[in-house]
Amino acid sequence: MRKTTGMALLNPGGEWQRWSFERRDLRPDDIAVRVTWCGVCHTDLHAAQALTEGAAPLVPGHEFVGEVAAIGTAVTRFAVGDQVAVGNIVDSCGTCAACRAGQEQFCAEFPTLTYNGKDRIDGQPTLGGYAQEYVVREAFAYHLPAELDPAGAAPLMCAGVTTYEPLRRWNVGPGQLVGVVGLGGLGHLAVKFAKALGARVAVFTTSPGKESAALALGVDEVIVSGDAAAMAAQADRFDFILDTASAKHDPSPYLRALRMDGSLCMLGIPDRYEPEAMALMYGYKRLVASGSGGRPRTREMLEFAARHGIVADVERVPAGQVGAALERLERNDVRWRFVLDLTDLG
Image (tube, rainbow, N blue to C red):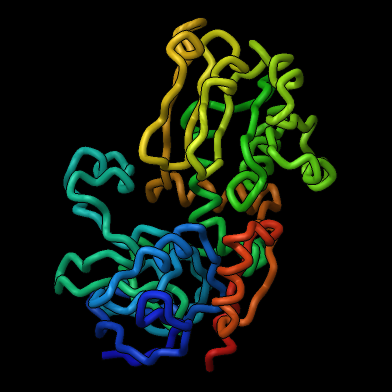
């Protein structure tokens, strides 16, 4: 077994602490990644809040970058010293229709998650990238383009591909007006990708104070969603709207903002979506949803990001301060993504 150290939550409501644990020995198609930077996702916060008594220790982290420290005997795509990136899926059945189509996020047997998952071979719980080292199948690791700053690239592996996938799936491009609901970890990357794809971009925000930050990202206009008159003026304007807001809310105002045949794509996952029927049916509007991306799209996303110089805007935090970072994340006190420096655990 390979010993490593990570930041863990051992008990519900407890303090985050350094915790030594073991990774599996390398299987023939595994690589060991010496983690350098790991993004802090809202999913990590939710996992910490959901931890129950008797559950396995929680080591979150599913968007990280690092250096290959060792390779299995059958590895062909990586060599020791390569810079790599790993996202929120680390295995899948490989045989269902979704997996064969390169859509492993929809694996019929459910994909193996980077943490809070279960290894498909030994059945052990997966522990995430808030750690010095991670062991992963080479098929689910990606070469990190040299053009990308590693700290800023780490969030591309979750927030990045989660926004890039629907923009590409619904053919966003030049001549279109795209709306982005919410300007946070996902939203700011959605803006960058949509602009690089050639679209004009408007941001819907509940916070008037974010207007200057949105304009600095290159958006063409900012709409305060709490302003009824401003929202009414958006009717029939947008080709595509990407809704990154995680809290439950009514999608109807955004459906009304779509042009005929337009699509509203939901990335947040509340317990249900409750649109008004007329807002949906008037004009052949579509309410769709998306989450994460498969291996081909993830590779494409990294290549696209490298060509256009796209990384997340991040605040770098020592790994030992993850508890404070998660508290600030809960207050929405970050612009736009925290990344943990895992080299300080050594």
